[in-house]
Image (cartoon, rainbow over all chains, first blue to last red; front, side):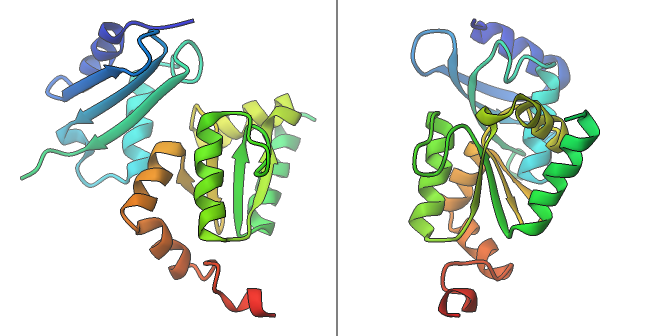
Length: 78
Length: 116
């Protein structure tokens, strides 16, 4: 099972419209990605909370059709 | 086990061990690259930790995801608190924050418990 990078980006942008997102297909198999998400919504949140917000945006796909998404999240630098 | 039993069992593991790693495989024989990374970090730091192989029990494997509201394995708990999965633990380790946190919580490798 796999998920297209554009679909991952679409789901994240739906939740965080102003986010800056970079997605890298690590293995070229559509199943192992690294994503960096920079969003104002993350400000003041712990890393765990930030990742939970992204997982929530992915609507249950993480850990299911999407096996591996290495995540790096942060709020924009002020 | 019922969902409630699983929840109680997980709570008990987290409460009775300073450091608990829910992982695929064991610390000496990890069965997933992400679980292996976290186990290697903890092994490298030389801390004592309880490894729970979620592949042994489907109830625990699903239960821990609901318990932490976290969709993936591994999951690290320190002193009853959810620290994160592979990405967060690695990021914290590389920044030296994981070591600081273990020191603060008194569960680093050179704590008195080891000389006892």
